[in-house]
Amino acid sequence: MGDGYIGISHSTVGRRQDHSVTGEGNTAIYRQRTDASIQGINPLSGATETIWKDAYTGAIAQIDIAHAAIHLGRYFSHSGVVSVLSGASYDHLIITPDVGGKSIHLRLFLFDSTNAPILHQLYEDTTVSNNGTVITGLNFNRTLPNATLGIYHTPTVTGTGTIIHTAQVTGSKQNGGAGQTSGTEWVLKQGAKYLSRVTNNSGLTASVGYVAEWYEL
Image (tube, rainbow, N blue to C red; front, side):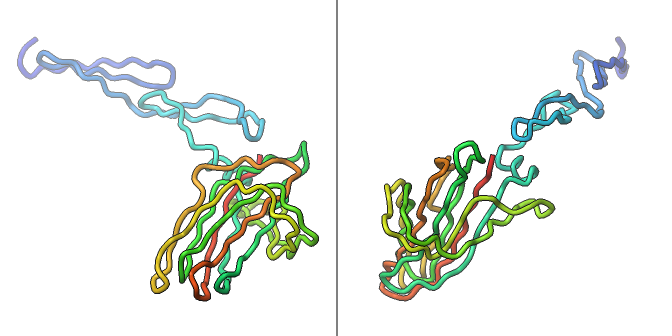
């Protein structure tokens, strides 16, 4: 093969087209991108759907479960800002669906405060004499209905239950603080009551912002 000679061959495998480029002492392969897909069962919806493959490598394109839950309209959030007196607490009550209903995957608690420290605690099997004021969990997919999970603020608590999570958001009285107080996720029991309690230990009145996120399967 003489100097400067280049041979090009083409082959098609499935829906991917391969081209080999041969020169002096070496061969390179490049692939022309084409559409490629297969059919599969979506484990969240149970429906048969198109699964897209990367045309260069043949790898199946993937997103994580939480991202898929957003697309399916099953990922929700509640957020707000409340004023909490020094030494006082602010409570949310979470009531999960009965056995056989949707499974609640609680992914995130995020807090910030104008004064610190503040303490966050999550209790299981809480008892109340009054649920408090109902809250609507908002759907991240705004084309679909909001959450079915029961959420309330300022319930009348008669028994906190078993504590399953504790975290403190630190900072200073002058600068406040912020922190995420839950890592991956909690899969909550069905037919149970949970108490999310924020306590202001800063010595001053604090404006506390919070975000909770979950998905329902």
